[in-house]
Image 1 (cartoon, rainbow, N blue to C red):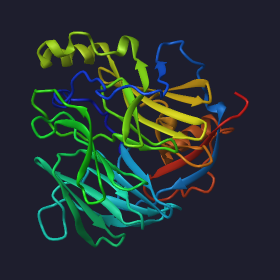
Image 2 (cartoon, rainbow, N blue to C red):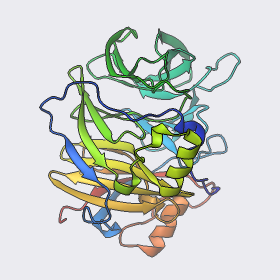
Image 3 (cartoon, rainbow, N blue to C red):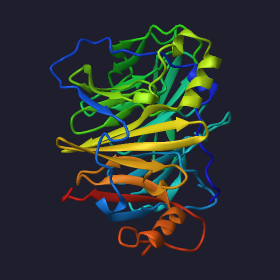
Length: 378
């Protein structure tokens, strides 16, 4: 495996954000306040985790991928997209055996114009979001690659999620005049029923690759990069439920008042933090926070269990085995994505926690999904 390149937020990416505030009235939902100060929470070590299961994603020359993978699950399948390419989806069964690729981006027959996000449907078909200009299309793919258009949406969406009660949530970013509200809810046919988070940002907008929605047993969480708030959608309301104090990694107060070229240089030099993901099941919540400063990238991954909060700090170059959380299963095990070569390195250094027993040694390097339990004695 080639060493993955650092993900750096470019000047172009910075053009699409502004200071954000929830326009919905607050409800009685309690807001959780968190921080990432140096001594905010007890720091976890590898010995505080137990690896319960390892799932290898079978890799061939046809499905080589990097580290920045978007992974979603159905009862029997996994769909994986390399966010740095976003040119097709790879399907695996739940044991990690490779099935095939679908939703290829292209100009010819059997292809789609763009691939921004995906979801599993009710019968394990894969729903694919393909935005073009001020509209977006949802395509329905069978697992053998056959597809049809489900509906066209009169909204420029960047990401979406299927709601268990029917319909969808879509996120459109800050692209005025196409996007007057950053989030909308539609029915199953794509008709907009509710609008949330009014958009008043008037600068030039560019598309981005960001996962905004995260399902849980409490509802659907929604986050936006550079927004210190996390929202929860349930019963047709979108409510702020978590606020982060990023301290020295907050955006400077004058960030949006000066030339963006100057702003980019300032935050890149001083460092900035943003949410990457949020996962919740039962009493456990995992909040994935990325901090970037210059060419370096690190993580503050918070584990909230009941009222207790713990922190796992990880550097992209040194501690990547627990760097990419991708979900929590019904057993309240945290799923981390890593690679066999990285796992092998840690198995030598921390044999009491990590092992490569049962993982093939020959052939190409490949992704591994770890099912990890946070030890009860904490």
